[in-house]
Figure 1 (cartoon, rainbow, N blue to C red):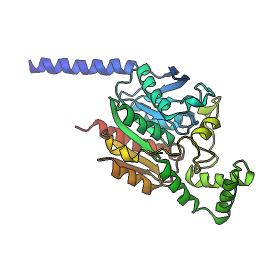
Figure 2 (figure 1 turned 135 degrees about the horizontal axis):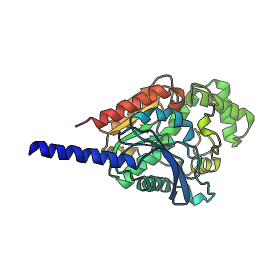
Figure 3 (figure 1 turned 30 degrees about the vertical axis):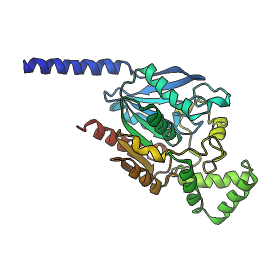
Figure 4 (figure 1 turned 90 degrees about the horizontal axis):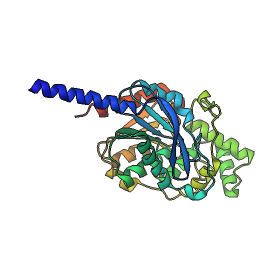
Length: 318
């Protein structure tokens, strides 16, 4: 009898895994969300629990990370999507759509369309703001782990970090940035050159401007309307609707396994990452060496190996 029960259990488990994987065959398509359609792409034939990626921005796109994150495809399906207004997704111009709760709703709508009953979620930079809001406001079931990568979890803290990092630039670059910030002349050539120096130190240590990968061929570029409306003119100047965003006082509410990840030279400073960790019981920190904010560009193998290690540790917990 015990042997029969075990056999039935095993067969049921295999059937569940098989039927689950059938929903996530590699491919791409569109899902209708509030305001338009969003594009998604599934990569990988692995049998593990799927990993959903929420890209940064606002107004960026997922294609830059496809080559790197696809290294995880042997373990599990990896799901990319472009937020509304970004990449291959529709680009409406209605500014009433550029609100955090609507971006949160996208996750639920995508999960429903792809039948994602169980999944891991990684939110990168601004994507972490979407992820934390999703976890706190929706209290979703089936999320097996939460990965905050170079996260925006508090705009005031982001601004504090930016001031500290700006102070590490040569004095002439600091003066140039302060001058044109005061004048609000964000297109001045001298200002753009100075900000490029900031990005070269903290955005990507590999090269800046970054080389656009072939996975982005034909994909519309950065949507400045969304970025400027929600954030502001530069990474270290918040003037948009996210200016007061801060969820540090509620991080402790997240009960799922959490990891905070950052590059050694990330614009999310390591001191801030460890401060976040202290707010989430039993969370962990992983630091990617020789990398800036764009870890998937600077160190794709090291970064994805760290993600793989975390996900496997979660899935083997009893």
